[in-house]
Image (tube, rainbow, N blue to C red; front, side, top):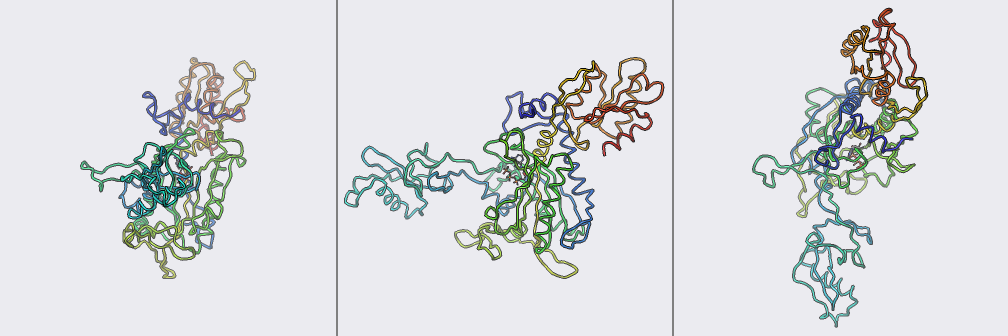
Length: 539
Ligand code: ATP
């Protein structure tokens, strides 16, 4: 039986994953990859880079676009200009403590709701309101009178404090009358919504020097759009990919590496003419789904969840999540591996003109968000990030389709999928339960292990020579300790697809056995042909 406990314990025991800073008691939401884990994660990232960017050669393109279309890469910094996060929307969205009202179902910024203590007899409540400062006292009085069911003639029974406080200045919210509620204590505990880690540039550290660790890699791509166009002569439609660390100060990191505070993303921003965006959205959704199944995730454990039209931003023609049935979820539930979003021209236009208002009236181009003085809330770069099609001479701001995958969630899904318990004969031929990680050969941390059957009769020398030769082509492991059956088991747990054994016959006829991890079949091949045979089998 597959269980999260067994998978977590194998990961620790075999060196896939360790809790960060474990000797100091660990730090929540941070994970280190051990010797096997680092190979697995690198292999996953390299498979993505190879299939999506460097080796991309898909001869099928939708919407009559030329094929293969261009895919190029970038590697941007983690710390960027603070304005990037203002125009992207992260500064507002990820900022501040929020409280939810259980009664009105409304959400408020904890530091924006103001109010005063109101007393009648021995009852003291905190009446809050979103009213402007000038109207605050009147509004508090009106609501307090209503709450205590007081008539105007009894108004002097009510005492209202002179001091106006915000919710974050209170010890608790139990006696708070929320801005749109009729009963007390309906607010949830405040939740940190600033998921961005703050940091300071330079030594002085004033407010203007505050910046953030990126919460996604995508913004580096948007702000470099023009640089890529000008330097590499790519033509829309084309895509830019990036793999890199992202940071989110998650409130509740949990489920092993699934929700971490430091994680890696593999993101593509695909730029296309606006009238092709629907076709490209479908293309990427299907291509990304196929990628996971080709690398071994079973289609029964994988779903594509299209967001309901009501969940979509109105500028978006679609968003779909690729989700996996992680064993830590109840049956029938799935966790997000990757999101494929159609983002319209929101990002490029925001970086050009200033943050666009996603709540702009439907059916109209989005407007720049304004502050209380009617000026743009955040100024954009002012740079022209539009594209001129040389063939038609048409100028437009490209639309974007964004397949955004998590490398750590990917690794976790492949680990969960790979974990298998089956039966295999031990050294004496008795069937025993074995734990085997059935990782796709492209992902397996070790591709082959080389064993001398015994540590004598010249076998170690031959095995060492084979090991040295194979090391030039792939990650191999040498093991001469213990019974050969035990060595096989150790490699099964590491997910090694092939074990090569040098035995007595090897010395006379220059052959070795290759044992297949999944079928347990052993075949003899000539030592001369071994590298080739393995490379062929690894695919
Ligand atoms: P969730 O809803 O699970 O928080 P999200 O929708 O916020 O995820 P995106 O912003 O779409 O995630 O990020 C794209 C991908 O980055 C996700 O599909 C996921 O694989 C990965 N990712 C996001 N947040 C985390 C995290 N805290 N830990 C690990 N991976 C993450």
